[in-house]
Image (cartoon, rainbow, N blue to C red; front, side, top):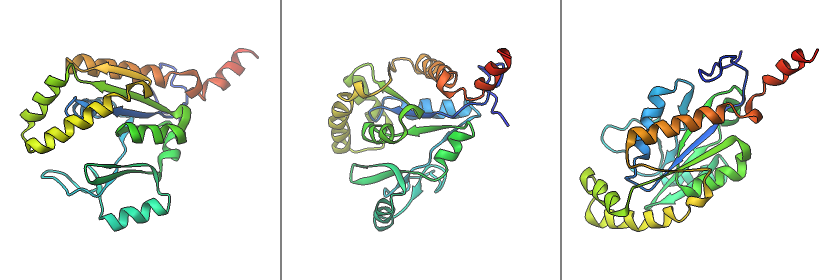
Length: 216
């Protein structure tokens, strides 16, 4: 059964997309990811494993799979992750399970990962991955956003800002780079990219049969 894409009136069967959003903390990536998931019924979030403590309001298995360090290391040893990274004294990893089968069914998977994870995923997934990096309008505005969140100490914010400079330096490892100075405009650009990537010829596996019928 083909997965219908509203942007494709013919509903050709297609291969799914591994859709990566990366940004420095506070640049708006999570907001855009939530809006995208609410608006795109064929897009599903990849739920990562992490060793960090659960925050208020988070649900195990929905926001993250929360595990201890021993279990995480065991999963790394068993090659159960597509990618994993060590961030702010905690570990985050994307499980391999179901990803490849979901792609084959034409399901799209959203990844909220950093540049290291995006790089690892690209090495494994090749043409299946689409990478978007979201920049803040300025580093000053980024710091203001982090301070307004009031979830971190000043020491943590300083560390996030130092990490942000390093993350921005890897912008050229992405397929698309957007500046989030207006969240609605940035969101619209992300939706346009997703629609175009779904229609890419290499993903339109069902079009081959259509072409054969045309040429009979």
